[in-house]
Length: 288
Length: 194
Image (cartoon, rainbow over all chains, first blue to last red; front, side, top):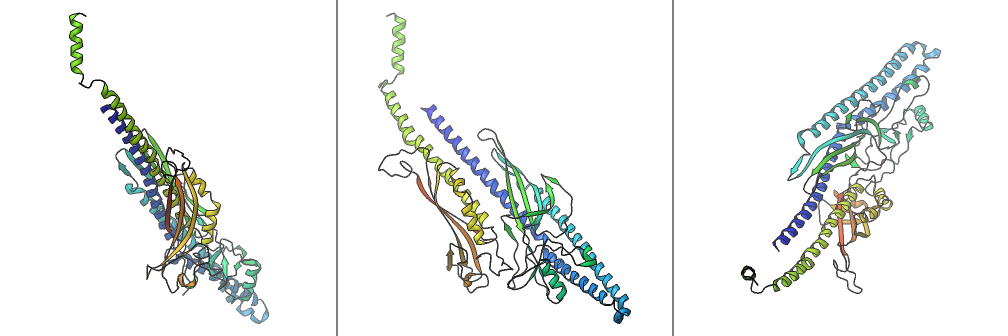
């Protein structure tokens, strides 16, 4: 009888052990999910911190308009009436073109800076053994960022309002489908080179897909299902850091984290849990 | 019988109890009772909390994913298109009878005031961001009516005892905060109501 009782108790203990292992696997997965979401949100926050991305988008839009009007001005000085002002118009055109190039360089610098900060955030998240958990014969280790991709959610619009002040440019943009008509305002499309006509077609004006403010409210930072996520820069692939650049400011980030789960309560069990989270940067503000 | 054999027989009689071998049959009954009333029902029913935990975890994970949709209609569409029922059935012994997705808006100023909608575009302007009832907390709610089977079910016609002759009915309900609080710049509609 004693032997039987011990046997029943042993079976019960094994069952409880198995149930406990199951629970711990779920618990560790939930823990990893939470860490991954935090990291994705933190990285997305850095993409448009203090609306820097939105401001650069607006600068690109204005710079484009300036180059177009400068070119028009220069062309008008081609006739006899304004020939004396041609030198000045050429200087204005030259300055506006170099301004456009300067903004492009500054945008690249901003992307590089954001990427460097993001890499540091990822390193901080991985260090400190935040994901390590030891409980009896159960342990989780790692919490490694396996994949980190920057990109956008395929939103076809930017936060830059299409100005109707320069009629020729506006009609050209509409012809080229560079403008998306909205209920309140018309907006420029994103992730498309908004090429100017003629000699200024060499300049690249590409806007980031940041959500514009609506009814005075900017879109908040948020997690998304990642449907339609398109990467433009891979910072880490399969656990290895990658180098690279992207031509537009990314507006979304996708983080894949993995964690090793080990237990030997009932036999040896070694598994890897994995979570994928996508976060979208906060929307831009209107210009003051 | 020789002397040595008689001595051995007396000794073995002294070692045995007075009731003799009748204890063996009582012991057999005890084992039967232990197995039939404790061990087997315990094993039979112990699988129910495991299945319930797994089901709850799947429902929680699903509603969390749906709450991250771009707009409310996307969430409803995703639930219809996905094989959510199959996912639950894969646990084994888990039969999802019906699922109901709804959005609950709760006024932060007056938490007693809530409104529940089960389709996109049904929230009145009072409950939208910037409305009279605002600010509001928006939660996506997924309710699942399910039946969880124990390991063994004794099918007895006409007898409906949950856990013995039929599966145990459960009502699972999980919530997650709605993520996209923005507004569509082209249509002007809030994503939470679109």
